[in-house]
Image 1 (tube, one colour):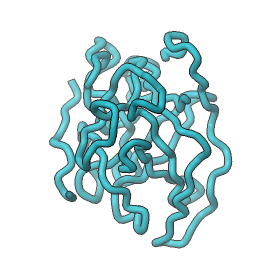
Image 2 (cartoon, one colour; image 1 turned 60 degrees about the horizontal axis):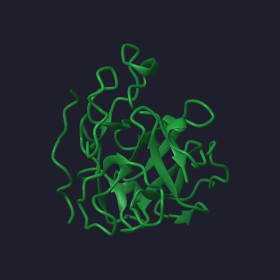
Image 3 (spheres, helix red, strand yellow; image 1 turned 90 degrees about the horizontal axis):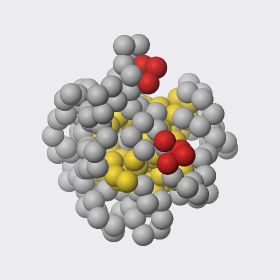
Length: 207
């Protein structure tokens, strides 16, 4: 079992299993590089859920409304409607070496997907939400980028740590399948893992 650490402390489908879901190919319209200390705070048109292609569940927050800072991000059965809090905006911050970076903002709470403290974190660190650092995103660890594995599936990588968005547990034994399992950060690939080495690190953007 992948280990996990305590949540924030510093501040403060399977496709065929779901009907009527539109899967997004790699998003177009990335923003060009920006000077240090600036943020475009640009939101893609539409709201997207993060659907885990191994577990068939979505990145989720508890209940249905807004949640406070330090709320753990978990996985849960996908509802993909305006009544739940599974929808996230990919808000472009800046480009580094040609790679577009984003903050992932929960539509219900307006808070960003976040990791503890401000720098790199170890494998197994749990993901939570916190106030978005729009002014100086590079000073925090709220910036993520995407590595597209194919036309619909992407790894979601945290810039500060270089780790991938992960579901606690392993795809090889099904220990990652339950509702309410925490999302963590973990190394992105290992040839010995299930699913061609990607474990449960492949996500689709759906709406």
